[in-house]
Image 1 (cartoon, rainbow, N blue to C red):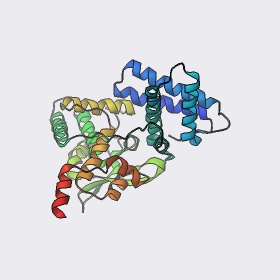
Image 2: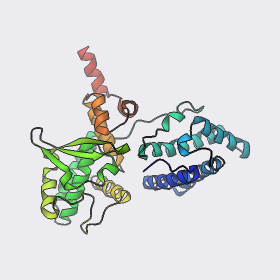
Image 3: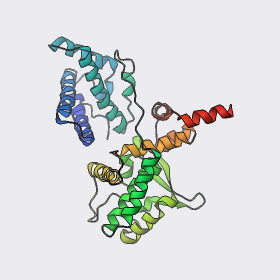
Image 4: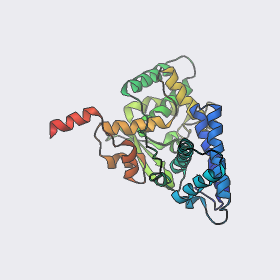
Amino acid sequence: MTLGSGNIVVDLTKWLRAYLEEVSNKNLSTRTMEIYKGIIESFIEYARGYQGEAEISDINRLFINGYLADRENHAKKFSASSKKLYITVLKTFFTSITENNSDNHDYEKMFRKMRIKVETKEKPSLSEDEIIKTLNSIEKEKRGPRNRLINYRNALLCKTFLYGGIRVNELLPLRLSDYKYDEENNVYAILVLGKGDKERFTYVPAEMVSEELEVLREERGEGWNICMTRNDTIINRSNLWTIISGMFHRAGVDQRGLHILRHTFARRLVNSNVNLKTISELLGHADIAITAKFYARTNEANKRAAVRLA
């Protein structure tokens, strides 16, 4: 969604609602959710003092430091550990805004020189063993006696994430007709609308999804949205999270969520020594530095191979 409307309090409140919905799917405790919500709400109250003078796009490191100084002045106890917690919560909040705003506004840089360093962790991804378990489970469910349409739909959703590396909001509007077969390369090319309304092609190996597409097209037709139920109602983001997480659970894979499949797509390309620029374009990143930040870490096998070639 768009970054802001010009009203800093209204915009921050809007993003808080979206953020709380996102983190509610991470099985955090009620107490943790209350702490996160309380910290961000206090930040919004601080921002209220700048209403009419600043917009959400104006928030920078000085603004964050001003808020932290205000907390130190008014809180009875604001230790270094408390400050670190506040920075961590605000960083996750603004990282969520960075990843989901359609204006490509990047807030992450304002945390890079904070007094308390917040390290960027490597994005989680499925291991090759977990991928095999998930795919085997998908095939087993497809052959089950019940819910044939739903099982094939779920298989297509999971494989499009895994082999196409697309974002959730890029997948939600897709229809079966959007999968265009490229006979020369034996892939399905999918034109998606990414962040900032930028179009790009992503590709899924034909052998991975041909059966799913054939069955779904036969039963529902080319115009069917791949995120529809058997009653032709649209699945929302939360439902999709539950569907994919349920597939992991039934496969015996201790993972949850949707974005992990996009991270897995990127990690597999890195481990296959695919050019970082190519990976960045496939992921739809506005800047190759974003790709490098999260994925440009090689594995030990690649290091050994590099030494042998030296």
